[in-house]
Amino acid sequence: MTKRIFALLKKDILLEFRQKHTFYGILLYIASTIFVLYLSMDKPDASVWNGLFWVIQLFICVNAVAKSFLQESRGRMLYFYSIASPIEFVIAKILYNIVLMIFMSLISLFLFFMFLENPVSDSLRFMLIVILGGASISIVFTLMSAIAAKANQNAALIAILGFPVILPMLLMLIRLSKSAFGEIFKAGAVLQLAGLIAGLDVLVLAMAIILFPYLWKD
Image (tube, rainbow, N blue to C red):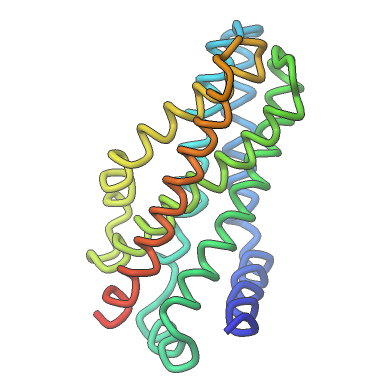
């Protein structure tokens, strides 16, 4: 099972390198968006900086993860159906999107630091929160992408279906990030927030593993 998961993961990575225009397009979107922010507001305060960062991560994820299932043709899906189980396939997709989103989030963080300065008091903590947030957002939108792919390839469904789940997660990430800006929290509150986000990740992951076999058969 592990070998098949890594084989599918390797396939997605190789396809990404062969279709570089998509990857570079997302990088251009990140750089141009942050540069426009730099031209329009120069040096935002910490709360605005934090909010803008996570909103941009949301749009980056929609652009980066939306294609994960929508790019798979029916014939290719039939081929994957014959060589792998649905659980192996969806786990490979989730792992790939987690890696991709974490990479994009770290690039976005670097550009934020470069263009909009660095109001973060604890950069290492914020980086760890960014990694957690990137993984969390990508898991949600991977599941939404799988559902949308079965609905006449309608990419708009990804944002519509993901909104009720991603909104509380995004608010928790923004709140958790404030701990890296020097805001004082009650004892254990930071770990509690991180635990809630991780628990929500596990719940969405379990939903993906349970529901995707039914989508796969369809």
